[in-house]
Length: 449
Ligand code: DSN
Image 1 (cartoon, protein in one colour):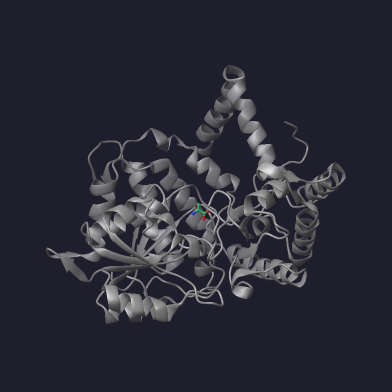
Image 2 (image 1 turned 90 degrees about the vertical axis):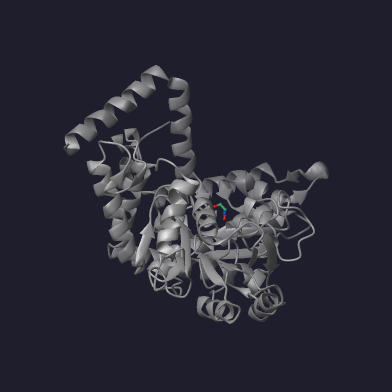
C-alpha cells in the first residue's frame, strides 16, 4: 500500500461525507474552526498534527486483532502486528521503559488493568483524594476503583504540596497493597522516589499515573516514574500530542516475579487482554506509533520547555495581579487558582468561554462546592505551547483572563454577567492571537466554514 492509496481514500471519504451527510460534515467543520479560533488553556488538552490524525483515520480501523503481535486470534494481522511492535519499541525508547503495553483504550483503563493485575477485591489502595488533585480511578467512591477496593485518600499540606509525611502515616496505619500517585491538578514536582521508599516500607506496590506530566517526563523536565514506580500509566492525547488512548509502562520491576510463576509485566499483559479488553483499537495504536515517533524528534523538547516556562509566566503574572494560586506557583504545565470576586469556578469558566478562552472549573483543596460548580480554575499550557506561543503571548493571556474575571459579575441562579463591549474586545484579541499561532492541522488560513 502506498501513500497514494491512503490519499485517494481520504479525499474520497471527505468528499462523500460532505455530499452524503452534510449535517454531520458541517458539525465536524464547525468543531475544527472552534478549535482553531479558541484559546485552549484546558490542562488536559493537547493537539495532534496531521500525520497523527491520518494514522488514526487509516484503514487499520477495519482489522480485528485480539491478542498481541505474533499471537493473534485472527488472520490478516501482518501489518497491525508491525504497527503495534513499532509503537511498543518507540514508546520504550521515548520513556526508557523495559515493558510497554500500547493497547489500553485510555489511561483509566490502563489504571484498572494494573489494579486488576495485582489486586483482589477488598484490598486496600492509597491514592490522592479527588478534591486534593487526584483522579477518579485513584480510588474515588464514584469509580470502580473506589467500589472494588478499600480506598484511603491522601492530600496536600497547608502550603499546597503533597503531604509525603501524611502518605507515610496513612500507609503505616492502613497497610495498602497499592499506592497510587499522579494527579490531575497538582502544580508541583512529584517525588516518585520518596513514594517508592514509603511503599517499600509497608511492602506495597506503586502505580504512577503520569497522564498530566508525561511530556515533561519524556523531555527530562520532571523526574521519571518509570523505575521508581512498579507501574506507570499515561494517556497519549494530552502532553504526548497523540490519539485518544493509554499506555502501561514498566521499568526495573518488569521482569520481577509476582504470582503463580508470572512476572509483573506478564500479569499486566494478561490483564489488559483478555481480562479487561477485547480487540484493540489498532488504528489508534498506529497513531500512537506516529505520536511516539514525533516525541523522538528533537523539536519535542523545545515544546516541552515552552509548556513549562509558559505556565511559569502565567502563574507569576496572575499572582502579581492578586490571584490566589494553589501551591503558590507551578513546576509543570498547570496553574490552579481561586475564582475571584464571588464568582464560582463554573461562572468564571463560562465568562471566559463566552470570550473563546477555554479553561476548566476545578475543585480546590477544602472546596465546599461540588465538582460541577467548584471554586477554582485550572489552566494548562500544552495547547498554546504547541501553537508556538511564548512568554509575550502568555502575558497577553493572563491580561485577557484578568480583564474578563475582574469585570464578570455573579447573577442569580448561577448566571454570570459580562458587558458586550468587553466580550467583543476580548473575542477579537483572542481571534488575532489564534490566527497568529495556528493549530498544527491548520495548514492554510483561507478556509472558511
Ligand atoms: N482527567 C481529566 C482531566 O484532567 O481533565 C480528563 O482527562
